[in-house]
Length: 82
Image (cartoon, rainbow, N blue to C red; front, side, top):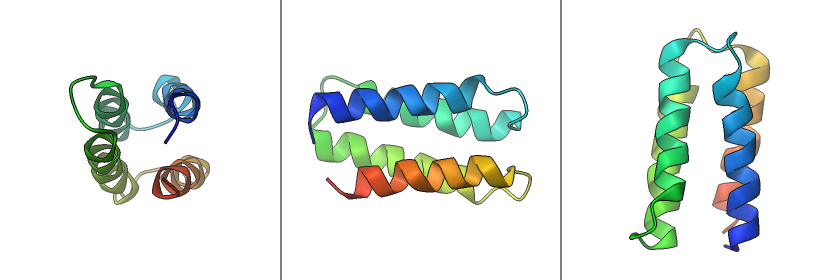
């Protein structure tokens, strides 16, 4: 996966993390996914797997707004298309 694509994904996640209508625990998972994608000493595949794990945990939250869930699905789709 190219660095440009990862930067685009991180930017999308940063927008979601800054949205105050998203529950705090979901924002925590999004923040962890951002951190996983920005780790420099890991292989890209490991970074992506960690981010997918965090986003899956965020998606499982019953309090997540539907539009946020849709955005997360879009990000997950982009990450899975490595």
